[in-house]
Length: 230
Image 1: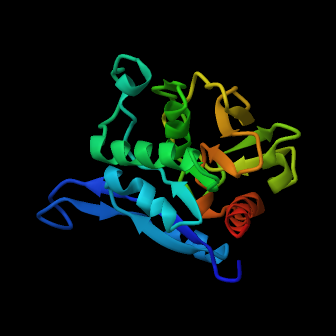
Image 2 (image 1 turned 30 degrees about the vertical axis):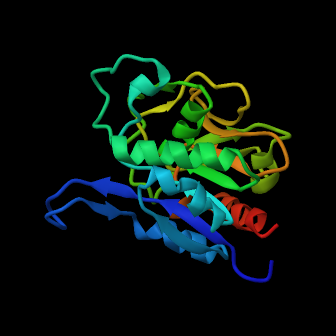
């Protein structure tokens, strides 16, 4: 592929107020900037579940982004905890449709924070609804180390046993579904990364590599774009 690959990025959805008097989409600039810096063309994806497959026809890779909201616990058979934040049904419905369509074809996929969690839910897994102490440090700063599992795609990408990552989440993958392999954990045992073994790049991380706080983040985004070239 001689052209730069097109990488779809899912958007957040906000209610009327603030920026506009009608519902509006939003995404931090650093997502698109990170994809462009890694050699891809970032394309933003509005919430139309019925068009998910046609969107994928035009893309070479997908990133399911994070956001300040939670996946509806009903989607993984759990009762809503007191600490569960607002949910965004329209966004989640679209991202689930996109994920499920992407899993049916050989398309590189990266889930970031909530995107990694939703990947687990889409495959039948569950979430821990609240993790005290995993927020509060600015995302542009390293917060804690994670241990990378050997002989995983992530280990080959980052080339290290341990890396430093940021931490802005309050949920995490709990029940790991069949088909996903844990490729990174924090010192307290929290799942920090997952991947689907096989030829296709399908990976999720709990942290936010779009902030590019270290070489591992840049390597991860570059690996996604490289996979999209094939």
